[in-house]
Length: 319
Image (cartoon, rainbow, N blue to C red):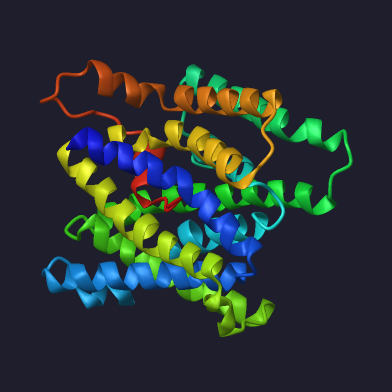
């Protein structure tokens, strides 16, 4: 059951990028559809946890939920949804895999936390992978919006990194609350902020939901991505540890590139594959300490140190 759940998590998280791409290409307003997805998913999960007695409505009144939602959901996914109008889903997925590197760099630069040398090498390798993905395309005729889209995805990952670091403090403050309830609350706030952004930037016609592509994309992302994906993820955390489920990050970007190529005709070159491999290698090195503990520590001995990326990824809804 653990391996089945893990396989489903990797598959779900790897296909959501294409689902976003299909929706925005079919005419779904990116900010409004993202807001609808996260607010509905968060509200359903929160009400379910409240019904089970594992969440208090007072949690929704805490400013920490607003700040976390502003970074983890609003900042990350407003960038991702907008950018996928101009970049392929596979490229967006691979660029999104830079999240742990952003966390490490922010901890080193602003929190003055000393990082192991292999993690810093991982960051350099990961950045090299980003350059491999982006620079060859700049040498040919590409839309300026393509370049801006790639940059926006990376800015979104900076927002995610800031939210992930802040969420460590939040989870300690609310240690008595269910992680699912905390995540649901911040999704609701992030969704509400996306609605607000949509109000000022988009002309939304409810008729977009009548399209099979837009309605199907939204349904898949809300139910399968945000609700089923989260439930399976937290079940894996409870049954194993916080590190093992987070290794979806190494599996899902290649899946995203593959499904985009097979089912949506997205271009994949050898340079693209090299960039994917390089970024995943860098991400593995960034989390090498946690992965070593996972592989070589006795099962009854929990990891003594959890890297920021491993602690935070339960809250990343690349779902």
